[in-house]
Image 1 (spheres, rainbow, N blue to C red):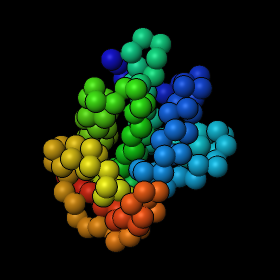
Image 2 (cartoon, one colour; image 1 turned 180 degrees about the horizontal axis):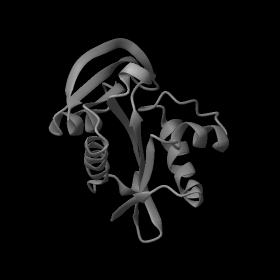
Image 3 (tube, rainbow, N blue to C red; image 1 turned 135 degrees about the vertical axis):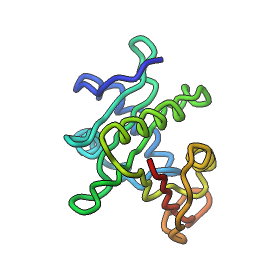
Image 4 (cartoon, helix red, strand yellow; image 1 turned 90 degrees about the vertical axis):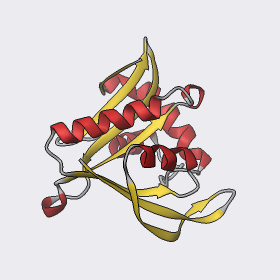
Length: 161
């Protein structure tokens, strides 16, 4: 398993991962009706951001994007998002991508990393981020429309680097 910078040719393998995760409606507020072009525009970061893929040989197992959480006076805090292919889950790929994002942000001189909208029912992600030293600094009640659970909260999670 290796992580490398995103290349335009990767989108053909990222799109099905993106589409499946968004369609389940359990972790991202992205619109499942987006066309691939709109999804790519949102997912693939331009400088100073960074998008990567994790692969095993020619097969992409997941992807991450990272960059400044806010512009201007908020640009010293990084943010990141992660997607792992359904058949690759449970193999530590989310942790590997998260650790990569934390190292990248630190190397870029960011002071902290913040996740603005972690769905509180996404126990795997919440548990991973807590294990990596993030703290839940607040929860926006009923801010996410989960397809099975109804309205659930969105955690804001933060970690100093």
